[in-house]
Image 1 (tube, rainbow, N blue to C red):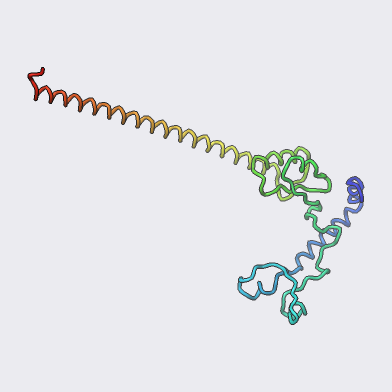
Image 2 (image 1 turned 180 degrees about the vertical axis):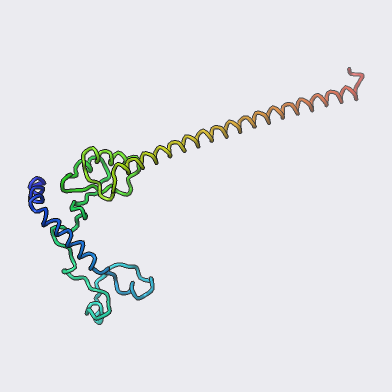
Length: 208
């Protein structure tokens, strides 16, 4: 098993051949048919599009009859040297944490940030990749992506603050209304008590 240093030297020496193989794979992929289970092609969406090898004794796909879907063969495969690599020639490595990103070999591998990673953590990983000069696959412009995420986080923070202030204002208004209602209620009660006293005085003048 070769070390990353040896492999990087080997790829530098065989760079033109490596590029040729990547180009060959690109051409092959254009010609390669989309392998699906035969029923998914002829049964109007009732069977999901997936690949299963036909095992029927009289299967025309297995016998490779004319007009039937293509059967998987070794010849359709990509060259072994570039199999599973990104079109840039780098090996994709799935990254979710900082330590996983730091373990990426910058010259041979490219980082792929997992889709479950949140924006705040994604921003930190992208900034770290920019600092360490690690290629992030699936991101065309790293600086623009960082800018977009920071802007999104900022707007989110602003809306959150605005919602909070709006909520407090509403709560204050609600409290103010409840205090006003209580005061009105007290006034009404005092008024009713005064009226009752006056009525009592009118009905019983002797007691006064």
